Image (tube, rainbow, N blue to C red; front, side):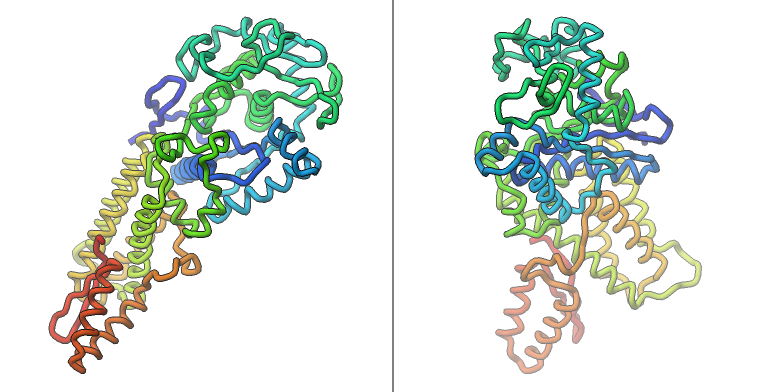
Length: 477
């Protein structure tokens, strides 16, 4: 199959063809750093991390850019509340961002541009927009004139400007020629952080930041521009206007937007006050459980956030971890065999890999991709249960390598023992409990033997007795 992705601009799936051969420029809107990240942020950054990882797997040379908005009304207001400089507040929460995000296994972007470090470049873009008749200055502020680019509006929302503005928050300013116009540069208010400019002291508007940083680092036309669905309007629509009026070229070939994280069918957001920080989730669940919870839903679909959902993700993730540890243990006693019939482990690995790629080529469908992995796990456990030891080494190696490629390299899951939650079972611990149970049986302590079997079953481990030998396997709970 060929990779196809859903382009918000066209509203349909399109074959992915980068602008320059196998080089991919991907820009993802980052956080405004005035508070700790919440789980909604994690949803977006994990989604685009998987997309990047899959593009790398396919052999693309990906340049990933994610910005930090460190100049913003929220930052100014929060810094005033805390009695610190805006730059100090922004720097603190930028560092907190990495403390929150790194445990999720998200690859570091190639560039993390900060708005405060691109002031000169933003001013140059604004000056050019004024020269081309797309912007105007009033009392030290500069506004983009919507009237001059009406034909470019609505590329993502597929609505008229009036329809998009219906119910939307519009910055009220009587100095604007048209209420719909938006600020490219804001004149400084007393006491605010500001920079010198041709129009006096001021600071950039929100939308101009991303347009400037994206084109500065990736060129006039991006291959992929990503972010949450809440950014489509006004932010991304405004980016298109500014960028295309400035360069005269298409701003992005493919627009990808992840779905919302919801609580009680409402979008999780700080403005609604219904959010959980990533730090709060780490107090109850290991980071990889949160990552698995997020990747188990297609990136464009909404996710209903709940403890029950995280607990289910924890059980499913543990099933993957137990299977991987079983493979590792089996490989220690595997042997190389003479050439003969193809190993069923190799055939299983190939089937799983093909099904996984088919799902991911269909707009990064991680839910179907993970289903292919669990099919591999189920069939792999069946083969291990049915085959005599020692297992064929070549086949097990192939299965292990495939499992790691799909789960670790592409989905970004990690299975280190140090991240094991309290109470999780390792194969070694299962074997030890089986030995204790056997001792209890030898002493005719049937109550203890039955208790061990029952507890293991509750934890997803089924025991099968055959004479003096007991085998085990992972089962659904």
